[in-house]
Length: 290
Image (tube, rainbow, N blue to C red; front, top):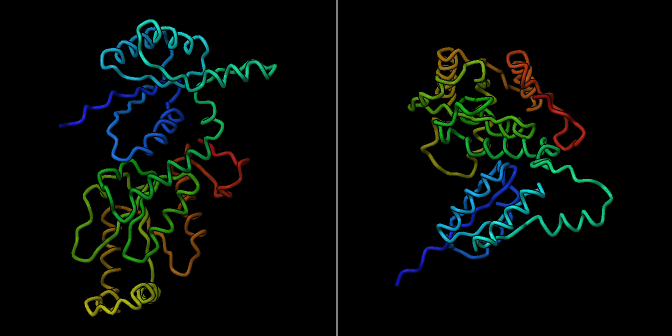
């Protein structure tokens, strides 16, 4: 006997609905393999929108969980849900009423205010998530969404540099150049002013690779650290950088901070709207200009 499909939960918000969705998902995760559909309906700002949402929930016997900070719209949702017998959970109401009673201050009633105030933090989280999802050439179709693209041979330092830049709010993708494998076409479709080819000297590259494979005991990796093969790999990488019109950044014997600053100096000149400085990612007072 098949189980009945659970009714959907509509997370309704005057903002992006992130807080309400996080709360719902934190509860759903306690029920393994649940198949409860959850839909976020954000930017709700009129009574007409409220009415349409409630009619939709009524039609499929769904539940409305809302985080409306606008008292009028919050009350409207609760009233209409009661009138049309739609189940509703007001995630903000009781707390908002309590604070109204306790604090002698008028609320701002501004959806998404928490995220705006904490923009720096959320911006970094978004950037880190994007960067990790694009590591080592994953999802090349999303390269166009990256603000910075790094490319180069294996062990040139693409991943640590990507993560370092992401800590400062940059969405970074990195694309490995593998011998015998053509780079993805998408690499050459990105604005070349955003693409940086990491060049590294052969001796340092071999040292990095030897450290990586120590203990692997795999004779098939001989070409990975063979000096002639490595020099040819670097030469072909430079050819690809030239073909794409990418900016070449020499990372040999340079700390990651220096390379990051060099790249961001280029970005600041080319895209002033995104001219960020490398300050401590943990200093809440730092302001990132947009």
